[in-house]
Length: 589
Image (cartoon, rainbow, N blue to C red; front, side):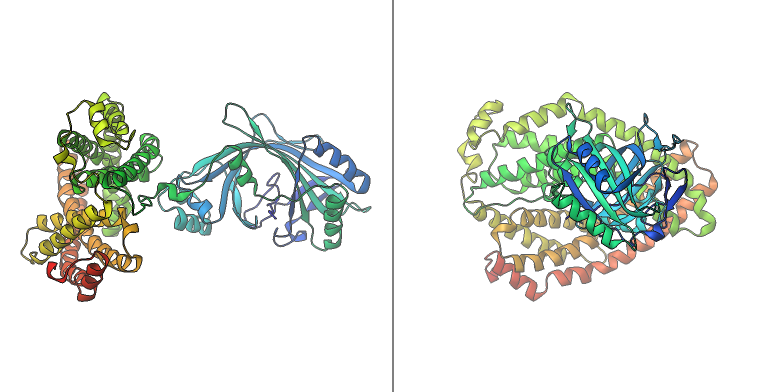
């Protein structure tokens, strides 16, 4: 059954899971319930659910008849449950959130004293057990894991989130009342915490079931068990079956499914080529639209990245699966999606330079590192300009027309009726003769052609070849891999996974080389542009020059690794696995 961390207020330290609670007793004396007196972990705490709204007051009265209770405080909090856009923490069974006192309410203790505070509490719990992993004061919702000051917590979140930002997934108001179970000597035997929840941010506020949480005190396990037995048998409160976060997500019809953001879809063998393409293209459009708001608001750089990947894969289907679109229709969409890739490139490029900036500084000797700071300011300044231009393009009639007409393509399974609806041309059957063929047949033929192209292009590359030849091979490898990943259901997993693993190693090398080529050229252009704009002095230009030298040396090293990576890809056993997976005759390679 779910368990919970103890109330954060008032008083908390980041050295223990439980806060020290300052409690005023009826005789005017104050007892401090220390974390030392509580169980070393809260794995034994138990949550019960109030099934009816009136239960909380009724249960309180019944508990008072059986036990000597003392209310220590009554507080109203605003709780923000946090996760990444793709639910990375939830998928790792982690619950993360931030609690802050409500603006209109202060913490109240029974001697009419008030504690005023706007400092919140950042907490992380294990979703399955409810045990507290981290809990410490924090005065705002962090944007990234790197903003967390707690070192071990920051490292754990960094491993899970990477460069993804925190986003509120549920916002709720929590009304919390804490009660102490006392003996005749006013010693605390157990702690009860009653909580009432209201989900905010919707047209109609949603109420969740109230909960009663029971915490043990070290040395009084017998009393703890008696309280649990009394609540279960006499008060008839059922234990909580779900975590509070899961209950809240269900109430707002939110499903934290990470695979909704994957780039592939399940494809039955029975599909025609047009039906398969329709499924894939519709899913890629959904990914674009799912990421559009995040890239507009610049929540994190992954929104634009994932948007561009969906655009790039859309272009790959348009270019690689031949003869399923009418000619003029295909030309229109290829042109418009190329434009969409073009307008998103400047912002993405600047994103990458900003992400790499710390690495750039570490490339330099310590005495030159601070001289690179003006370069960061230059990147940030131009990023704002390019991001504004991107948002303007996404607001344009051209973009709206593209998305509208693209959606019409998926309104029916009949390609010919869609081309008539779009009024671009009368469809010629010769232009779409692959549309009704089995998808596996058409795609396998195209994959075989791309495989042979990869082998041909790779074998012609020598140490003297121009850098552009490696870039062309990189693009062919990308098209090849996209088709394999799109239609992976059609082929044996074992052979395909081995092939793709070697292909990825080759692509990593080609991708690193291309990135370094672009960076070397672009950094020289940036340095000249900064000089013209009066944003860089001699020391900054010199530091950027040293950086270019470092990247040029690394570029040469990556280039030297290419031949070994390519040999690994074309090994005899890998070619045999490919022939088997794609039914390729030995003479074809």
